[in-house]
Image (tube, rainbow, N blue to C red; front, side, top):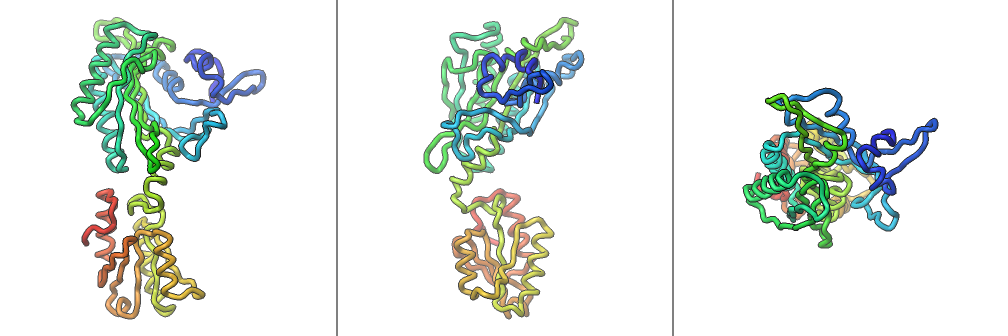
Length: 346
């Protein structure tokens, strides 16, 4: 929450106030922050900066509030309160290319793990803009070079950049073939000017830094919503809230089932024992299948005697006579490799 004076300095009060939650406290007007950038400008400006300090990077996994119209709200993909993996980088113009490349590398690393098919657009200078021509040309050139070097397909969106700088927009498609804006990399020549941000150059002159807005996931709620629809309950093991259910063939084997459960939970895996005495063994198996858990571990007399266990995957692949150490090693590989399939060979 910031005093309204900050939002007037940044320009958000004049251009975005209808989407902000504003209120009065002791005759002072305040607003819940809809974005982090003005606050990061304050942090940069607390003291004089040297060219040797740049780039300066601030990251903020904070809560944001935006007063969206009720008709625009949609599940988790469009909400009024959300968390954003926000970052702002203050750098010299000649550092823009290197910083953009690092942002893209980070972005592609994360989204490759999540399995998203990315649609990348570069939006360039609109008719109405601020900033000098050579700065825009340099910035757009660096963005194009970084996108070309990343090896991904991208589209040019001429004239659709913000008035304060060009941007890279990343969209993903959900299971219903709807596109959602998630990641963004945005250059900003406006806020450094509004907040009079400077750094002392090597020749003792004062220069204005370039500001880069960077969100890899954007709204965490939106990403969770898209992932939920994409996987339709069949979460990959490393992301699953329902990794393992353990079933014993009869109550006398429950102690062995619980020893496996304790071992798995001590290593951070999500495990539970279905020991409901009112439900038959076969019904427990069906119930596990319906719950879409990644693995059902089954223990009977043979497994108790040999200190082994049997597994059934969500795709009904049966795996027998494995030790708990074999299973843990397999789970570790699924997590380490961010595997989408649980059926990798042991």
